[in-house]
Length: 446
Ligand SMILES: [Zn+2]
Image 1 (cartoon, rainbow, N blue to C red):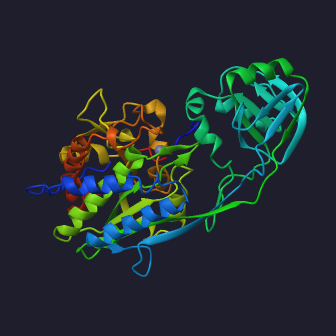
Image 2 (image 1 turned 180 degrees about the vertical axis):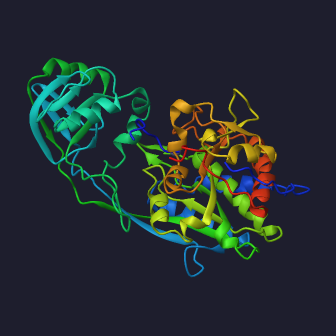
């Protein structure tokens, strides 16, 4: 699940009879896949690294072994995605009077032109700052930041929110905004203005220096060119219109890898979701051919902004109109202490999918953390915006291990994870063998 600073951004179903016995989950298979994905060899599967690429090949091998066909064209399993990310030639520096801040230390530069030279002014919410660099008074507020940039400010400096402070090193090591995915039309405007977050002590120093000229130096280096892959599989259904009535099961297999000398393994985020999709692939591949076509997608580079999923949407292996439902699996390896049995479906109130899956035995319910905007924070959202009824199933999306080096196998509750997959195996088999057409509730399509 990707980290975000803020959210800036019914039909009545005819229920098919439940299958007599849900397929039996293979706990050893789930364990073996988890151990490999979150193990030493793949070193945290960071976006566009050889480790991530090796993870993609592993997933492809598993899909093949489970009898799932490749869906990336010509029977291939891997869909290649090239990403070009901006870099800085050296750590950006901001000088305001006597105050000197360096990217990664007192400040995080999320985007910046190569140079900026303008007065620093302290602005309250709603104030304009045309031609100036605006220092936002008070806690970070994305709306205030957008508004002051719209007023003509050439840059915004804001206090880093707590969740950014908690993941400071990760952000310092992440590429600045402006990554281009080759073959995908850019949706965000080019980076002309600066956006900088500062630590609380740096904010105090800048407040005292407000009114002085601010000079930002952020010399760009050559773009970093990286390759990631989406691992894609398909089981064609036996109904004559099976391909036009497909369901998509998905997860992202990348995580953060090595950052600042620490290894982020992402056992829960999202080796767990990947292992779940692989297990559904194994069960569906081993069983009787389902009536509907089931597509599988394991996306790369989700953590950096959903690059893999964006490419998939621009180059889908089947027309998107054929995808009648998408279930994304994210962080299902650690139970929510508030209710150990419950899974949540993000955007529960948005469609008729959750209630019907619950009717079929899934231990699933509404998202108890709506303020976290989880519906928007996983790859499902990108499909949802294209019209596919796409939602994410998670166990506990806010464990203390989230985006920490402690998100490792030792912190995964494997029996719980197997239970979760088992609880979903029947409903997914039902979905793959029925006529249920999920729909958005009126006015709830994003
Ligand atoms: Zn994540």
